[in-house]
Image 1: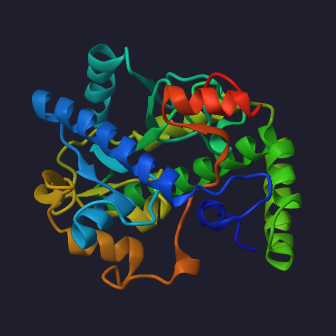
Image 2: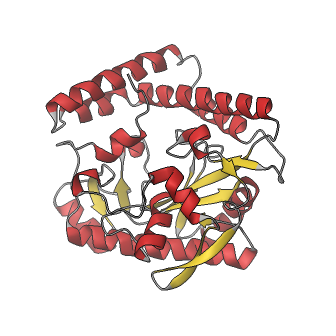
Length: 321
């Protein structure tokens, strides 16, 4: 039984969730691009390194902007730059944005950071207990890892084990809404297998509940950042979709970047973007079939403006984000 659930949530459909209309998706992409450009402005002003990650990098290289059906933005940042970014961005843009990180945000439960736009509501399965659930950009720290093969293996196994434990502890905290999501799923036979995975992770999480979710999150984050060698040959993004070993790569060609046009603006991608995208997606130049498109699971209320918020309230879908 495969217990990784990252891909599950990108293809899960449930009657508890909402499907974005084409107009809503277009407005979400427009809002996300505005957020991305705000983040990049700060990075460029202060010399903070970043590169477009995941589907955002794929969109930049293959489509010159958003993948037409995509609904999120991902960035990668070397750990040292990430720490500078969080401090500077909160000072520069704290009036418009929240910044959530594993170390500083209580009851968070993610091992990546998020920049969220105030005055919006984009609720995902990460936000069952989060009142600050605005439109978000995900930021994945790029971690140094050891040149010595044995130490690198130990680092990677620790990242995998602690990341899995943290995920199970989060499943235990979120067990009721997660199981409701499955019980109201649209694909019965497929959801039965997912139900087994969820129940297994919840049982493991119950065994790990001697520590709070916050404690597990911070222990795991500390292990991720364990290697301090800023010139290490290898780096990884253990909080990424492929986890430590699937995201392990040479620093050269990944931390080093090159500009590509994204919605008409030059933004940074990995210098060896082909190698990076191939590692994540295989034949990334091939357009996937519609049934393979990755989408988030969203919940009401969904709004990106004051007018939409008022409309959501009038429908009884909720209030403040």
